Image (cartoon, rainbow, N blue to C red; front, side, top):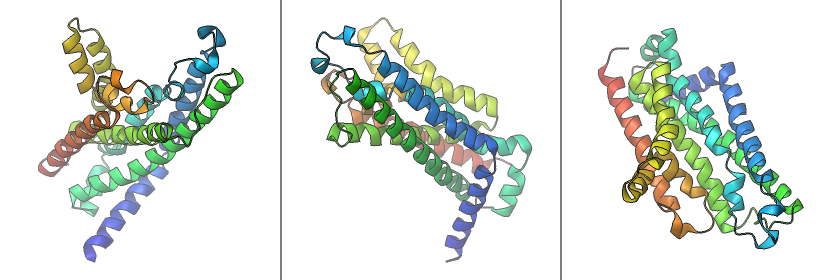
Length: 262
């Protein structure tokens, strides 16, 4: 009973910290705006001239509508890093760990609050991007799948899960590295630079293996709704790769949080 009360107290404390920071809401707004606006820009770029018969165009319109997630994940990374490193920067981490000596409990509380906010904002952004994309595509005569179609639901729910796992990866990196600039640079390199470097490999086999191992390339395979056999990795297997990165980052961060001084 006492443990449950302490866990609830830690959750309330972390929720209070995050909701009172202006940066939290600006970054969540950036996640939604980038996801929707970049998706709209990508969808609008698909014109009737690209396909003689728009209704028969072999284009993954769901994935196209969700293109903005590639940009939105940057806001998620920054928010996740600040959730932990912000306290190290101001020195308030000492007060936090004095009030709640259970360091793993503190990290778990931060993870729960961060995941809740990220999932909520991601859901708004993903649904907004899909709705906007459907309106634009239908207006141009393209076949737009219903939002209740199985592959579309999987892509939407999987994208929310992708962004949530991205947040956990950033939180783990910040817990391990402490410094905001170092943690943000490391996490952004993992999600942006790694896939780009994988595409530069000359050997096709090495390139495909690198794409399977890159968290962004693997994780975003969940957005594909057609030609799944052409993907370097399956949708759910790709999410599994990202989940492994998140788990590794959190475990490393949790271990270092326990053994190091504040």
